[in-house]
Image (cartoon, rainbow, N blue to C red; front, side, top):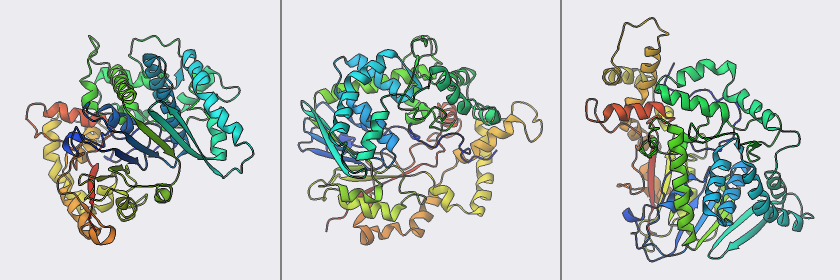
Amino acid sequence: MSDEAPTPFGGMKYLFGNVPALDVLRLGANEGEAYGSQLRLLFAASGDLRNVAQTIAQLPPSYEQPIDIIVNDREFDVVARNAILLLLALTADDRDEAVDCILHIWYSASIRKSHVDIFKQRIRSLIQNVCHKVKDKPAKRILGKTWTFEKRSVRLVLEKEAWDKLLTFMDVPDGLTIDKANEVRKAVTLARSRVDRRDRDYLFLSPSHRVARQRFRQDGLLLPFGARRSEHGEPNPTYFQSVDSWPMSDSADPLSGWSLHEVDKTPMGLATSDIYGKLFYYVRSTLEKFMVRMSKSAIAFQLLQVPAETLPNHLDGSFDHIDVSNISDWRYLGVHRTVALMAPLLRAPSINPHATLITLFMNMIEEYSTNEDKVKSVKTSSERVFKYLPPQRPIRGGNDPFITRVAYAHGHVQKYDHILERFVEKARLTFMPLMAEAAMKDKHTIIEKWPYRLKLEPGQEGSLEEFDRLMTNSLSSRELYLEWKRIQT
């Protein structure tokens, strides 16, 4: 087993995050907690709403100005779910009821009858009214609708045919029973052909975490382990758009979208090893903070579904902070095109010297590593790995689980600063001021360059726990963030 990502199996929709949620503002370290101007944020390739929720939830009480938030993704399913979750949040009469509904629509494969009722009573009519008004428009006509809720609003801009499709997210397909939906999901999450893959994934988990993860694969419910599940008798319509397919891969995991360190600190009473129960309470707490902060703020959301490369054509004005996820990887737009497209959308330094573009690189290390690097890395990392994973018994051949764990750990314990230097040189990133009127920030103020690599040395207090956390989540330690600022012209 190498330390590379596993081969995907199942659907190809990304409805959960694959890196921990990020507060893209961090006002205290940037504009200041009592910043006196309106903020405009752009999530250019948003994925799910976790970064939006985390950012709003972390707003300091002293910030009292309006906020404009543009949320874009090219995938319709992602935009549809984001629109539904925001509308659920903004139409809520009962906050606790809304938080519970949002959490399960987001993360659970089946939901309660009460969640379905909220869907039909609160959201369906909003979408249905739009579909009725535009029924005679051409299929590709771009149409927008703004819903206003006191100081808050949501504007959704879609092609006419996408509005019609959005209405189908209110209902499961005809003939899809809860038993059939569970069968379709488990054909992916518990596929017999993937037993070996699951066993390898579980190698680094404690016994209690293996049980919890297996339970989530079995029932697809984000709940504390001992919580009653019988009320979840309705398939989640935002997952099931056909009677015979599950949209996500078998490795899709709600834990991947949140900081495992923060989740693990969530109080759970006596059930200290119930990691999905902790995630349930952590997400619920984040959503509660998100909704409380929204109720006190003037926030205007706009949701778009366009390719990121065309996004500037659909936008007016400039932005204080822009998050582009990893479209800056070469397999997507690449760093030059991404920065050239997005940096001009930042506010000028004379208006906001803290305006920042955040780029994520998930594949850069693999793209810029040579075979020589890989050979050297095995030699240099072996000693470090064995400090975390000393052999406990004689090794029984090449298929021994210990060998698998060591092979997987090699890439996670290394440092890749020399590969970053090569990337900067070969991609000529120091020339970006000439190419895109933007420059890498010397000091990051949103997120550090290598947020998920090991910080402690083997033997330091807490180092083994830090290593175990890295090994048990979906991160590789190779995730690189670069922050950019616009150059004054």
